[in-house]
Each structure stands twice: as structure tokens, then as C-alpha cells.
Amino acid sequence: MQSHNIEEIEKEVNQILYSIFKGEISVVNVLDKLINYKNSQNQKEVEIYVVLIYCIFDEYQFYYQYP
Image (cartoon, rainbow, N blue to C red; front, side):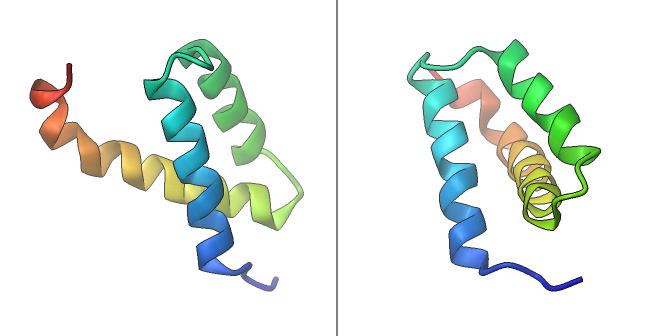
């Protein structure tokens, strides 16, 4: 399995997070994406899943500061 370009993965993760915060995509839709990415045969989608989960847990410590 070959890893994809980390900048490309981060860009897609940031776009998903931006869409959540702007209200362009619902949390339910993101959860559906996460489930699909986790179970995907596409290595890029699995990598997006891993980075997105990491970012969510990393940002959790700042949740109380969110508007």
C-alpha cells in the first residue's frame, strides 16, 4: 500500500472540517463519510479517515472556545 501525498490528504480533511463549521454539511453526513472511509478499499479514503479522526480528537481540547 502506497501512502498518498500528505498535503493532499490534509487539504481534503480541512475542506470537510471547514464545511462542518460553515454549516454546509451536517454532522450526520460527516459521520456517514467517516464510516464509508473507514471501510473503504480505497487507501486514500482510509488515510482521510485516519487524519480526520486525529484532527477531531486533537481539536476536542478547544471545543469550549468554539462559537
